[in-house]
Length: 215
Image (cartoon, rainbow, N blue to C red; front, side, top):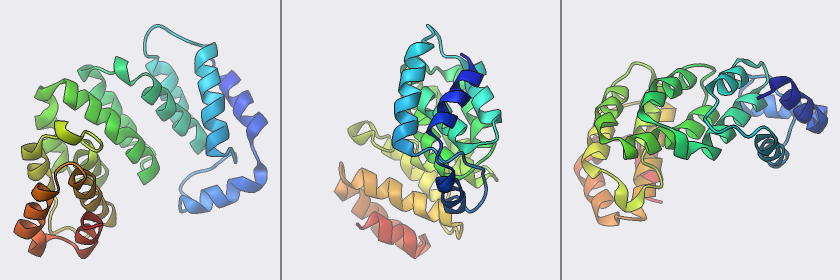
């Protein structure tokens, strides 16, 4: 897949006046071309169609991750989402590397459900999520907390409880928010379990986690 051609297509959509607000929204952590998300997704979809490959092209993903503009990382995630059925257990270390490079909530929240798909397909990877939930890197802990989002009745509640308990008594915003999100999401499937969890652990939970979980 031709990264130069992708750059041409993104540049054609770039609105320079949008670049600085987009950068500011991400706390000035990354440079932006100024491509709006709907335009990027549409262009990426056509690009993937034009350069369709039978197997997942990790060289392309890594090349996107190496680019200085954040839109390229978004395209890489778009690509992985489009090819998530091709993700296998051996790809988990690759996703971990992406998660720990140019880390911020936008990329982490794009990767968490991809990790979740692999774990759902490969139960032996559940221990990896427990390990991640204890990692010093809070971005990995966030992925572990939220990797079962949208899995509804397929959610492993034993695993979820272990991971959440491993992250109670935290002050890191991105962790306390993630705990609340995971509980709120699962409450749509099993509100009784979430109420029981809150009753059991609320004294160890941040107010933000409780507030998000209770929505």
